[in-house]
Image (cartoon, rainbow, N blue to C red):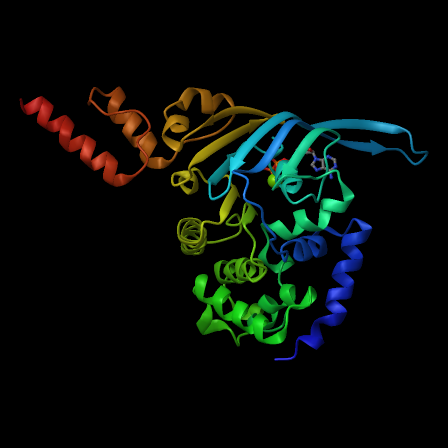
Length: 328
Ligand SMILES: Nc1ncnc2c1ncn2[C@@H]1O[C@H](COP(=O)(O)OP(=O)(O)OP(=O)(O)O)[C@@H](O)[C@H]1O
Ligand SMILES: [Mg+2]
């Protein structure tokens, strides 16, 4: 494989990134960053974080101000799996982009690995510590062969060729895409492409991966494979995962769920704690997993079933226990 073939793409992506940016190209570049860590417990921290999108008319006068993030305090430790929920326009993507300093606060502070995202000198460290995966896999894949794509990031930062190969092997193994390494990404399913995108991020040795609706464009099997992959990376490799999603089923394995509404954190709890509050979730236009809904219906019809049921197995156990109570 010749990584030299990728140089023109690298230049294009870097240029667009500096110019702030054609989003798909910037996403592609931002997804390929690496990690240089520190040992603080708090990996992502924000205080009174605010961000506004300011629209100006042709004379430069402010036309409208859209407050997208409003006084958000975050404290996320290394190795945690955090899910972010919220209805459309609640600020999830804006918050996600602050984690890799694609956006910087209008007010308040965001620290990544102890680095203030407003400090230009820390930008490289921050971008190197957090990899990003976006919704559309086609916007994140640059190489014409899977293994080339995965090697793009390390090549871009001057990793020696032998080490690039090691990283490519390791990353493809971790996302279970080794068998496809010589294929064209165009020939892959959406789920497979997303796993290649994740491998591209992994090849940069990140300590945190932020995934903004990575399964939104995938079929159910592709969704399961991507979620299984990131769950494994979290549990086995201790990679901090920040998952933004609209699919409630995808957050049941998270350590913590954060619910955003109109740019504010309105709920923050374990998945069970969050899904025990069906009415509150509904007030933010959010749903609960199907199995939780069924459990809730059974409970309302008189069966003794606990709140916040998250899996079919849990529901089956509860039904069996409820039967026993009735028999006694
Ligand atoms: N480039 C932009 N210019 C102006 N306003 C924007 C821009 N991007 C987002 N917004 C606005 O900021 C708010 C938060 O948007 P954001 O994309 O962060 O929400 P989201 O929770 O990711 O939504 P979705 O679920 O639709 O992806 C919304 O009101 C949105 O319209
Ligand atoms: Mg979004």
